[in-house]
Length: 238
Length: 238
DNA sequence: AGTAATCGTGAAGGCCGTTCACGGAAGTTG
DNA sequence: CAACTTCCGTGAACGGCCTTCACGATTACT
Image (cartoon, rainbow over all chains, first blue to last red; front, side, top):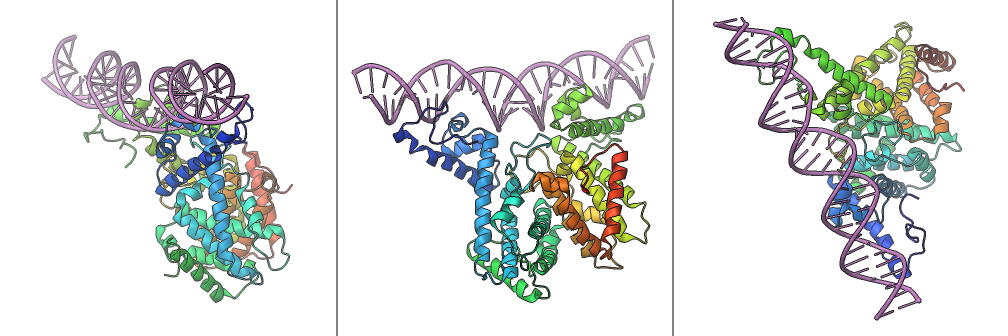
């Protein structure tokens, strides 16, 4: 609803076919430019996006419903990327090994968050409503964690209560958010001690108590794979 | 360092005594006006603060080093308030009952956060550095959680490893942040199910395993006391 | 060819933070 | 008292932000 319907005109008229074909691509290019700014740590403003695209800010209003809508689009874009990375990280480990899958996804989540702090803030930071009103846009998705759990269900022991999954992700979210937001000593982040402690508990929650060594190995593997794809994260095994 | 030293002039000269007396009060009034805006959910801008005080924005620069500095002052102000509330919440329970104290403080923390979302975001939201650059100011305190643990040490079983306290607070932070930031279904927040689940684990971590009923009672008591002081929070015991 | 729709532009308004020269008020000093 | 110094708030101004608007040029359809 927030992005302009690509098949229809502002006033509800059907858009001519020849023109409509080019439009969705432009919305994509706007989001792409926004992601590029995000990646470079630059401020994501309509002007900056427009400049990146070689036009002026008002032009974006033909495709996007303002800065808040751009925030939602970016947030959605980042979210599917995260889910993709979590899924990919868990895939090497069989469905018969839920603890390994969970640890792999959690490790990937932390690695991604530390590498893409601006994106993490956008999606997992403060959402709108009751805020100080100062934020230009803020994570709009209703219940990111709810959606995350739905799309990447960390398996419990067997048919563990569904809230168990949510609680596990909540614990993981807490530790990662603290690290990304800078609320714990940097030394603690670099050492990864806090994360490893949480990892042990989450592993235990997934029914792999006492299997710490194997899960630590899984975590290392995920980090090694991330490093291969050009990403880097301070090794927690230091 | 960030606020102008009240005893000294901008250029380092000693300020006349008669004048200096009025000045610290003015810095306080600025912070007070900022907190009022925060409380009302209005945007905390220099202009708004100045208007609240009956002057113009440039006037504030005589006392405050800009918007970022105001953010730091506000953050600090809120932080000591939180520590005070946590301490007060834990006080009724004796030092021989660490689990009760921890649960009481945690319940108070959640209640405060849900009642003062803007303040929570300011202090416990994204800190500066590597951000999208859009935020006018963001929690500046180095390691809020580190400081919180230092000032409000949740006691472990006996001499549990110090990281245990940090981990417990991290778990609590995660669940509260998820709720305040709107990343879980509102129904789940209202029911308090997630928080209660976390509370059980935190209680167990503090060495009171299997004592769930008593700790739930402690939680209820804290909420009742909060309600008496004019605050309200959706009762988790619904 | 003529008409209609699309789309980018510059100008403008309103908000923000910030800097600056100015002038009035208050204090200190002779 | 008078003269001087210091403080301190102001309005103007600059740049940046989001957003709206009328306009003109380009494009597509008939």
